[in-house]
Length: 134
Picture 1 (cartoon, helix red, strand yellow):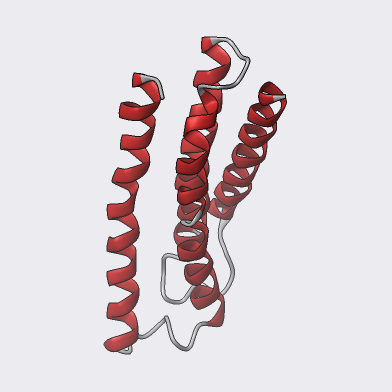
Picture 2 (cartoon, one colour):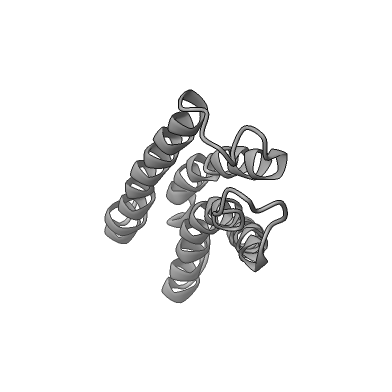
């Protein structure tokens, strides 16, 4: 694995684990404290659950990192692939959480589009990496 992949990309992805843990604690606080706006709000509950589930894209990104250095691609393309893989596990959960921040939100706001951007980033990174590995 190159130094760029090992230190920068993996480092950024691993630091995001702290945000996942913080979000998990916040979610647990809502459940244990039976905070208003969470248990009785199925939209918020569903989107926050999806936010935590999509943080699992982080594992996929970490697994893909070693393959980037084996891809038949230039440095610029490899950097783009790394950026796409780092963006996905950040943008997807962020979109789910920030789209229903207020307890009274019963439908997602426009920040839900961050999930689409994250999904597109993951798809583009996977496609670019796959093509350059062949």
